[in-house]
Each structure stands twice: as structure tokens, then as C-alpha cells.
Image (tube, rainbow, N blue to C red):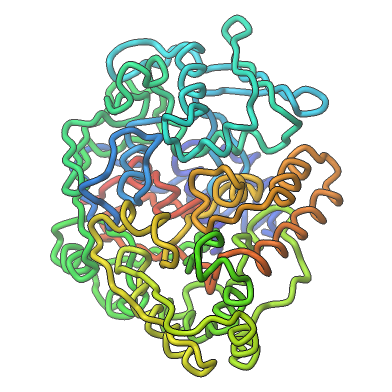
Amino acid sequence: MTDYTKYLTSQVSLGKMNRREFMGRAAAFGVTLAVAGTMFDTAARAQEPKRGGNLKLGLEGAAATDSKDPAKALSQFMFVVGRNWGDMLVESEPLTGKPVPALAESWEPSADASTWTFTIRKGVKFHDGKELTVDDVIKTLQRHTDEKSESGALGVMKSIKEIKADGDKLVLVLTEGNADLPLLLTDYHLVIQPNGGLDDPNAMIGTGPYKVTSFEAGVRATFERNKDDWRQDRGFVDTIEMIAMNDKTARIAALSSGQVHYINRVDPKTVDLLKRAPTVEVLSTSGRGHYVFIMHCNTAPFDNNDLRLALKYAMDRETMLEKVLGGYGKVGNDFPINETYALFPEGIEQRAYDPDKAAFHYKKSGHSGSVLLRTSDVAFPGAVDAAVLYQESAKKAGIEIEVKREPGDGYWSNVWNVQPFSTSYWGGRPTQDQMYSTAYLSKADWNDTRFLREDFDKMVLQARSELDEAKRKEMYRAMAMMVRDEGGLILPMFNDFVNASSKQVKGYVHDIGNDMSNGYVATRVWLDA
């Protein structure tokens, strides 16, 4: 059974899909009517989700510097925290990535896609008892357009020039047409808050399935079920306890001993060992996440493109994929888009390990001496090992890389997006436009390669408003080539999301949107005794 058919049957089990819709989708995916009928009947008879229990998660990614403000969420830990207590206007379907209603129950674009009207769901209450209004939505989005908010969604929001109400509807007027707008609003920073979070952005009050009962940055967060939740297809457990476990060995031990029900960031090297445990299930999902080595293009010595090219050719991607990810992923090509994205740019030559080309560009750069690379275990699973492998492959090109292992606590505030050469990861974004807008536009707060190109910025805006898909695809191809050949990104591999759970955990949804069921893991699963 494929991931997609698993998803379809899970929707039937949850009562979210009728027979007609299931049969249609399964047939479109190539499943025969006879097989589809059997699958539907089996799913319909499947055990209904159980309510109750205390779900415990041991997650990597927490830090003492974590902010309660969803606008400033950086880590994997806070990604899940925000999903537990908050909702966005729009969500994405797990297996296709298409936009689906959330707090916005429907939307309608103008003919040129430059003006969008959203119908806001009625009868939804915040955790403090206040009813959601269109004004809360307006003020939330406005807050994320303010540079002082330091929002991770600022790059996305800059394309919106007017946010207003039309009666009880939300109207967004864009600087140019954008057919992807609903998907852009799935950004996990854009949690709708009372009065937009202007009164207290750190209050952690939303409309989500769980209320926050305690939070200690870098340590733990606890939640209780929101009994007034506007949805019945989520929030199955009574309470959630999220425990910060940045040490990979500690996470494995906690799951194996039954201390927690679920862990993230499983080192591929330990997968075979985990598979032998009778109480543990390995959860591997393909998606858009990618592991990266990032250079600041505006900081010496990385302001020299020949040096950047030398460092790109000096990486043995195939070996890194096998030894670091155990094959749980695909080789990357130094731009942040893979085949899961619509309008993927085809026909771009795969960059391969080439010590001779690396040596040529290194000599041409005029650089001498070592190059300092900072890394940490929290950057991505196997990041330190990857850095050492890189160090060895670069030696064959005459390039000396000094690897400095940084402490995990504070890595995301002191190293990533601060130091000029480091390891990091990206969870991907729903659209090419959002990926480029978030991390590659000159003014994007998370432009962690300092890729500052006016011509690239112009192309992003042109592609965003281009409704001819063939033309848009060509623009995305040109953008990919610019990032690949002139940017500061070294992208050796797209990772599968490898997590693990106790077999007590049921209903896990594999979601291409992002890791940990797109952050919704705690809200989607239930416990079976």
C-alpha cells in the first residue's frame, strides 16, 4: 500500500471521506475498482480513533532561547508547540500539498489573482473564550508584515499591500497576482491570535485543539485538550507532554524504555536497530526537507564565487547520502526544490563530486589557508559526521576545511544565520515561491546565505504573478540555476523525515508538507492500549 492509499484509508477511518470520494481518488491513482472497494470496506470497519491518555513526545530542537511568539518560531520543538495550540487560515493536504480550509472555510480570487476574498469560519472560540472575528485575522496578518515583529513569514507577507474587511470577510490585495496565495498562508508562523497577538504575542492563546498548561523554554511544554475545539477530527489524547531531548541517544533510549511515545530526528544509522524492537515502529516520510551547508555570499572569503564553486564541487554527495542518511533521501543539486514541487525545473545537470573542478576553482579564487565550517548535532541528524566526510572529500581537491563542533543549545541563535559557514536544515515550503521568498529574497529575514541579487528578486516577483504555467516554469528554472551556480547554498541531500513511535501510537499521517506530520503529529494521533 502506498503512502497515498494509506492516507485515503485513514481519512475513511476518521469519517472524513465517503465511499464515492474514496473510490474516485483511488481510481485516479490507478487502483482498480475491486481493490478500492475492498480497501474502503476494510477502512470503514477499522477501529475508530480512541480518545484519552497522555501522549509523551521526546523532541530534538528545543533551546533556552525559544520564544513563545509564533512569529519567531525557529526550532522543530516550537514548530510542534505552535501546531498544538494554534490554527492558520489554510492548511495543506498531506499527500498532495493542495490547500484545504482551516479558519478560512473558503476563498475566491479575482480574475488576475491579485485580490483574494476569504470567508472566515464562524462559531470558533479562542482558548480565552473570545469568539474569532475577521478583525483578529486582519491584525494577526498585519503584525506579521511589521519588520519589528521579526516574523519568519515576513518575506511572504511583503507581497500583500492591503489587508481589510468586507463585512465579515477578509480581503487581501496583493502587489501582483499570485495563484499560490492560499498555500502561502499555511506558513506555520501565521497562527491566528486574539487581536493579532498585539496585546501579548507570547500568550500562546489560539483556536487549536490544545491549551498550553506550562512552558519552559528548552525543557518542556505541556497541554490539555481544548474541550471547545471547533473540529472533531483531531485532539484525541487528553494531554500532551513535550520533552526537550536534544541528545539522539537519549531519544532512542526514552522511546525504547517506554518513557515517551514518539521521537523525531532518528539517526538513520540506528534505524535497523530500532526495527528489531517489537514495541517500536519506524516512520519514514519523503518530502521537501533538505540538509544544507550555507555560505554567506557577502562575507569574505565566501564573497568569491570561485571559492563557493570549489566548495560545491568538493562535496561527495552520494557518499554522504549513503553514510549519513543510510539512503533515506535523495541527492541534492544546490537549489532548494525537488520533484515534489509543482513546476519542478527539469533537465538541470546534477552536480557531482569532482576534485579536479574543485581544485581549478579553488586556485582561481586565490584563497589560501583553511576554511572554517561550524556544525552541531542539532543542525541535522548526522551533521557532524557529514562535516567530517566533507572535510575528507575536500582534501582530495587540496582544500582544507576546519570543522568546529558547536554546542546544541544556542546553535540556532548564535551560529545559524550569524556565522558565515555552517550546517543547517530546511523543512521545505508549500510552493517554490514561498521557499525562495523565505530564504533567498534579498530582504528576507531568513536569507541565511546572504544571496543578495536584485535580478533574482525581480524574477521571483515576475514568476509569482505569471499565470502562464509554461512561462512560470521557465522562470523557476532560471532561478534554480542562479541559486545553484552563483549562490551560497550547498545542498547535498533531500532527507526523508525519519521518526519513530511506540506501536501504541495510531493514526500517524505521512505528510509531505514538513517533518512530524507537518508538525501536527500530536494533534492527529491517538493511543491504543
